[in-house]
Image (cartoon, rainbow, N blue to C red; front, side):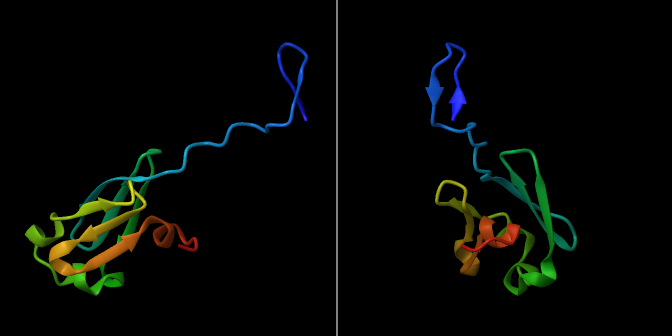
Length: 91
């Protein structure tokens, strides 16, 4: 239990930080770079994503967020990538 500034007991713990979401996507010559709302950027080799590796630059830029930023979808490529998967967590 925590004590509030007024001396009252509270069963709520410290506030959880907001869950990061995908904010933007970019590419280098050999990597997918996923920019998150918490300021981090995750860089993953394109070799990990054969459809993206073989795509044209125009196809790569045609992406959309899914689930409010929990994933990325490329309609033209039929490719979906989850943020949880990029972070190494279970979907």
